[in-house]
Image 1 (cartoon, rainbow, N blue to C red):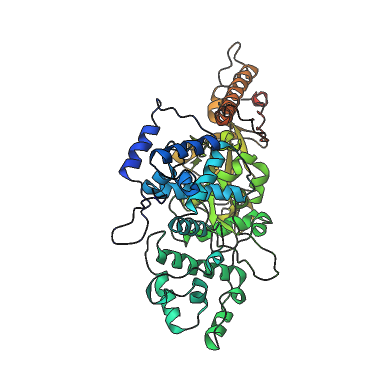
Image 2: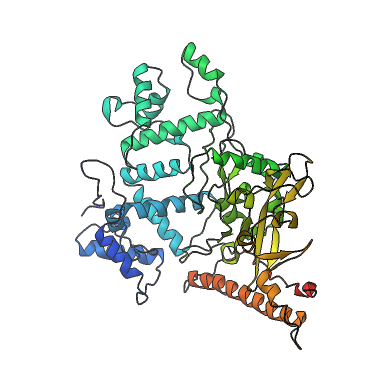
Length: 521
C-alpha cells in the first residue's frame, strides 16, 4: 500500500495536469445536490477512520504517511474523499486551496478549528510529494506571495544545465548561460513543469532587481555590459506609501490617461493588480515582505475618506490597476454601474462582515466614456480631463444607499474646474445621455430620481414624512437581511461540541434616511 497518489501528466511531458478528471467532475456535481449532507469531523475522528481504512487494506496503521494519504477532506466540493484521491484527480483545486491556506497562516491566522486542522493535514501530505511542493511554490512566487530567492539552491533539472542551481544559472556571466536565459523567457510552458520553475525564477529575480535598483540586480559582469545597465534608469515600482500619500487626486486621473497607451485590459471585472515582488536584501538588512497593494490603496485619497470601509477593497480593485508609473490608473473598460462581488456562496473560515454590506457604485464620466466635446460655461473654450472629483456622493435609494463618483474637467483658458455632474456640464449633453444620470443633486444632498418621483403626488396623507417612514422601513429591512446572512454563515461554521470562536467583526450601523430634507420636491 503506497501513500503516493497517481499523478496525471500532460501527454508526452512531466508537467502535472491541473484540470479535474471526469471522476472528480461527477463527485463535485454530486456534492452540490441539496440532498447531500455531510458532518464535519474533528482531527482525531479523521485519523481513526483513516487507520481503519488502512487496516482494511492490510496496510500499516502506524505509518503516518499512509494515515495522511487516507485522511478525508472535511470541506469543499470533494468533501468525504481522501487526500490521495484528491491529488490523483484534481491537482489544480488542491494547489489553490493550499496556497490560500498558507497565506492565511502567514498572515497570523492561528485557528485550530476542525476545518483549519484538516487543511493543515492536507498541507503536510502535500509536502511529502516533490511535485506538489514545486507546483505550490511556483504558484506562490507567481502571485508574489514569496520571494523566488527561496529556490536559489534548486537544480535546473533538465537540459545542458541540469546540474546547475537556479542561482548559479542566473548569476552566471557566460555567453552560453545568458543566451539560455533569454531563450527560457520566451518559451510557453505548462505550470508546474521544470522549465516553468526556471522561467518563474528568472523573471522573479529580474523584478526584484528592478525593484531595488540596478545595483541590487544580478552581479555586474565586467566592463561594457555593466556600464550600460548602470546607465539605464531604474524601474519605478509603486510602494504603499506612494499610493496612500497622494497629495492631489488630479495626479491620479492624469496618470489614468496613460491607460490609452497601455494594452487593453481583460475587462472591468475585479482583478488583482500585478505588483513586482520586493527585493529581499541579504546579510544584516531587515527582511522586507513582498509588496501587495490592497484595493483601498488603489483608491484616490479623497475617495477613501468619503467611502465607507466596506466599499474600499472591491471598488479599488474594480476601477483601478497599477500602471507603468508610481500611480494607479483607471481601467480602460469604463461603464456607469459597478456591482460588488458580495459574499461568497461557501465559507470554510469566519469571514469579514464587509462583503455582506457592499453596495453598488455609479461612475459618471461623459468626457472619457463617450468622448464628448464639452465647453467651459464661463469662456466657452473646450474642456479637458483634469482628474477625478475629490469626493463621492452618497445617494438615497429605495432599498438603501449607493455612492457616485465623477470626473473633473478643466478649462485651458480661464483655468476653472468643473465636476461632470454640474448643471453647466449636464446641460450640454443630449437627452439620451442625460437621462442615464440617476439622481438629483443639491449642494449637500443626493437623491435617486425614483425616490424624487414618489414625492410628486401631494395628496392627503402622502407627505414627505410618510415617504421617509416607508424608506426607513425598507432600509432597516435590507440591513437586517444582510446581518441575518452574515450571522447565518457564522452559525454554519459552529460545530457541535466545539467551543464557539470569538468574532470581533463590527457590523456597519444602519443609516437613518434624511428624506424630510426633500420636502420641497
